[in-house]
Length: 128
Image (cartoon, rainbow, N blue to C red; front, side, top):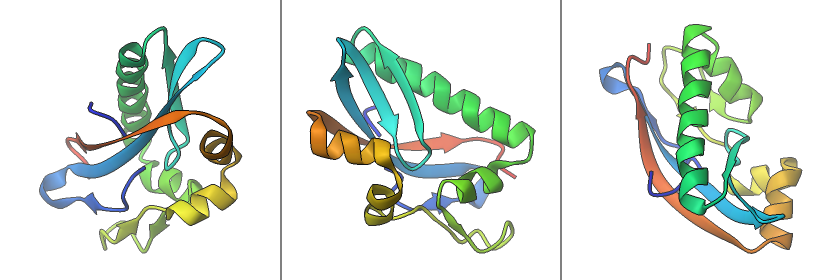
């Protein structure tokens, strides 16, 4: 994972989920933290690379759980995603302005911390 905010594009063709993620990496109390505001997921490590690897596992476990529980759409909606319907495949992530307004963690990172921002594309197989 090179880095990670969902840019708002989910491709559900071929029964897989592909998304462009944006993550923020910062140091707090000597620990590296990686945070994805579009899903409100985070992970940490002693190094930035360890935090990214831990985030990958957290992300995979989160999506595996949502897929197993058939709750992915509900989870995305709870995080501010606009979903017109499970079959329409019209899914959009919340914009950065909405996330800044509604997410105090993201506001704190942007306004009070030194951070790095990364972008990457992720794919989750067997999305139904």
